[in-house]
Length: 145
Image (cartoon, rainbow, N blue to C red; front, top):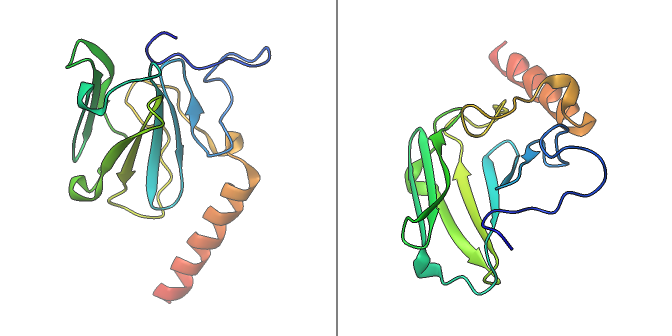
């Protein structure tokens, strides 16, 4: 398996349609979101040692590399700020690196994860997410009144 390769099922090009987690599936990684965090999954070759994974995050940037920095999977600006002290990563079953980013602004839906990637639009989000956003906004307005 190549670094960051995801299976492409069906005739839809990866990244064209949002996934069920209101993010996107790309060739090198997938991301999804809820009201509090962003979850990024990166397939890595089976048997990958956690010491060969490098994950750096600051408030507005994420960089993930394999094999001591020889293979950069993600290196870019984030859509919005995260809480670096509450972010972490782990290697799952020696074949998937998972990165959890805690949003600085809860209840805000990101249009993209890494700058330059495909953007979400409201009409592309799943209906459950849209309903949740509408009810959250109504509650916020009611609480301010």
